[in-house]
Structure formats: C-alpha cells, structure tokens
Length: 148
Image (cartoon, rainbow, N blue to C red; front, top):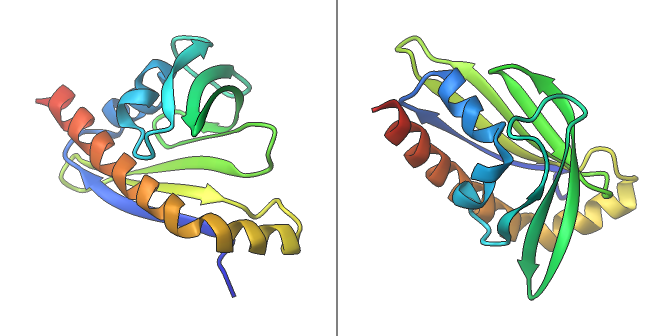
C-alpha cells in the first residue's frame, strides 16, 4: 500500500536558526527548490510566520501562480505550508550535539481521504522523492555557505 507521506532527512553543518532563516524567507525558495518548478516569489512577507500567505511563480509544463499559507510554525523547529490542496510541505529541524541541524522534509498527504491519498501517492511519490532529495542538497549547500 502506498505511503501517505514522502520524506527524507539530512544533517546540515549549521545551527537550526540559520537553516530556519532560509526556509522562512519565501524569496529563498526558488534557490533551494529541488523540483525545478519554483520560479520566484510573487508576493508575501520577507519572513514567514504562522498564517502568513505567500505567492509563487511556478512552472510544470505551463507557467502558473500559486498561493501558499503557513499552517504549522515553531521558530527554528518546524514550518509547513499548503496551498488549496490538502497536502503540506513540512520541514522539521532538530539540533544535533555538534551544533548542526537534522532537517526532515515531508510531503504530507494525510489530510486527503484514503482513495485520493493513495492515488496521489502512487502517481507522484517517486517524482516527489527526487524533488525532496534535491531540495535537501540545495538547502544544505545554502545553509552551510551562510554559516561559513
């Protein structure tokens, strides 16, 4: 049975505050996007907080705009957003003993009804896993460069 979530983790040699600062700045998202679909920020605050809305230019075949809302937030620990769909993009940050950060990115489908959740997971899990893996590589590079 397909999973309802797709996720991956990495350890970054930078403190949680440095990693979170990148995630909480929607203008950085196009630079860390591993899917290649985020083209730029259309609107939104410089720093995201719970309830903040931000728009993005996207391209997946055709160009389009999407509006997201931050639905989970714990400073330097957790941030998640969603658009009109029920899935969430979540980043969980855990400090490591050596001053770094373990980051887990999750594409959370758990709020969809079971048949739709299984269909989405079956259709998009592989592509989404590659995008998450790519995002974590880019996030690691950006955070470690900023911490150096």
